[in-house]
Length: 185
Image (cartoon, rainbow, N blue to C red):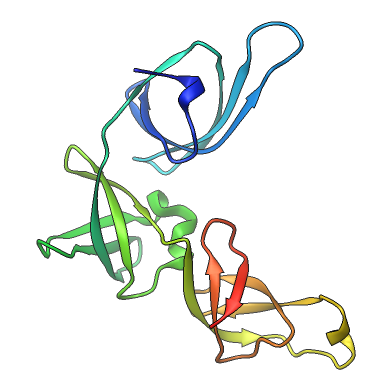
């Protein structure tokens, strides 16, 4: 058991028989009374995201999550298939569980798979991924003096705002935590 004051982004725990991962965490201390811990949680089995408030002093049961290296292989619609890099064992996760992470996946990518009691729960993406621009708006002459951005569509279908000098065919680095452009590769 851990106190809810110890919850941070990425911590996995059980509550009401379900497995949850903390996506966002905020500690709020009103003028009087106990502090409130506001969290955004993702149910690791169903993929549902919920908001939940804890009162300071509450406790939840933390779990030991095993992590191992996997490689993303392919998707067959709703299931995304991964291969353990040591045992070559294949594991599939549904699109509902992966949620927004599917927009950063490309074949051959190395990831970390989280498991609990031999049940695949989640994948951890690298901080940045390199993706090719397949479509980008045209830059208008004269706009280059300011820090304006344009929309670009990447090979995975992800749309990001990029500087005007980025063109179709360029490979750019995208931050997987925020979904923002980092640099041209």
